[in-house]
Every structure is written in C-alpha cells, then in structure tokens.
Length: 338
Image (cartoon, rainbow, N blue to C red; front, top):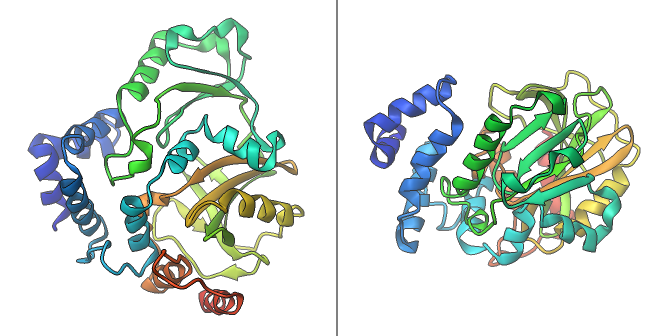
C-alpha cells in the first residue's frame, strides 16, 4: 500500500501535514504520536492483526504478509509481536520494573543508580535530587530529559513534558503490544557520561537464549553515530544499515577486555526469550545494563541488501522451526562475513 495513502486513512489529510511538520521539527513528537494512538486504540484484535500487515507493507514497501511463513528478520519480529507477547515481556520492557528482573538474574552491580520513580510530577522532591540527572518515562522510546544543572530547570516546562509522557500510551503504532500494559511513570537515574571517548554501547542480538551478533556503537553525536557488527569472537560481519544516521567505523575497533563477561550477561538475560536485544554500556571499563529490546526498530530494520535480512532471519528460530546446532550457526555467520 502506498505509504501516503496508508497514513491518510489513519490520520486524515491534516494529519499528513502534521507529520510533515513534525519531520522538520515544527510540531512536537507527542502530537505526532497522539494522532496514531487515537486511531489504533479503537481497533479490535482482528483489526489489529490486519493493521499490522498493512503497516508492514507500507513501511517496508514489501508486498508480504509477515504473519504467514515469515523468513526475514523483520518479518519474524512482526510474527513475534502478535504471537509471543507476554507478561514477562511487558515487565522487561518497563524501564523501572526490568531492574528487578536484572537483579534476580545477574545482581545489582550492573544497574545504573536510581534516585526514584513516581506516579506524578507533584510527588517529586527536587531538593533531594542531585544537580545532574536524567529523567525517563518507564515506557516508550526517546522519552527522556537530561538535567545538567538543577538550578536551570524550568519546572512548568518539565511538568508538561512529564504529563505528555504519561498521557500518551506507547506501542500502538507498529503494534508493539508488550508496551501497552506498562504503567506510565517517571523515573530518575544517575546521569552517566555518555559523551566521553571511553564510552561504548554494545547491543547483543540474542536468538533463542544465545548471543550471536554484537552491534557496537560509539562516537555518538546527536542522533548520529558510528557502528560495526561483529560475531561473538569479534570478527566483523557484513551488516550495514541503510540510513543517514549510522556510519561504519573506518578502522575495526578493538575487542573489549570484558567481552566474555558481557556475553555471559547477555546469555543469562536472554534465556527466557525467543529473541531479545540486550543493551549494555561500557564506561571506563565498567559494564552497565541499558535495556532489553524485543522489537528493535519496530521490526523495520533498513539494512543494505536483502542478504543480511534473510541470514539474520534464519538465526531467529520460531517455535515451529528446528533449532540450529553450532555448525549451522557458524555457517550462517560465515556467510554474513562475505
């Protein structure tokens, strides 16, 4: 389905204009979200499934029903959205409640220090908070506010930001069902120095409880960054994103000294799931837990060429597919290197 026709049906002609204004930064992202949520929240289960199919076709340009015999990575993520949503996924997608899951699995030492979690803005005692911190919504993507100097807080503006986070549900657009039952609260954590030269972001793509691919990200500048993909022995694989914000490292980054420990953590944290991306940070040699992501890029990864999509999809084994042995996994990894 033509992408413009798809969005016009759901948000109307005025909505299309608002989407265009949002893309050039004239209207707030939350206004953009609200238009979708208002449409999707009125669908029943049967309509929801059909909506996912149409959404996938319009956003990928592929005339494929991803729920029937899915093959690629993107297609299988769509299948998991509908057929593998669970209370455990909801708990682990909650940025606050996932802390208890991580603590039970691997201990507290990898958790970013937290200052509090609140139902309402009015419940926050700012006098008890440090000068630097980061506020986050317990659900959603890109819902955070960095505070570098508490004296400069515009409290009315901050209150409006928090209210917009709590008013708007997250998960309807793209049918990420596991987000819908998360309580929309406000949490505050220690502000880590994510801009320093020693910061690294490791995203471990785990298939059937086993980390197989590592997406390494560094040199963040705004929304852009450098990234390279590796196997678990730190051999580069040929996965390249087709977007304007991701750039491959010119030189292959060295393997981190604590890679083995991060792989162990990723394996333990992924053992309950068919697929999950375990995000870990390394700051001056210390490992921090980031988040568990079940639907990266909403199952709409834009990689150059179809080869990566198909090969990574073959690593993700759905319940009706036979599990891969070590030799088969290694064969797929070797193909990804070519």
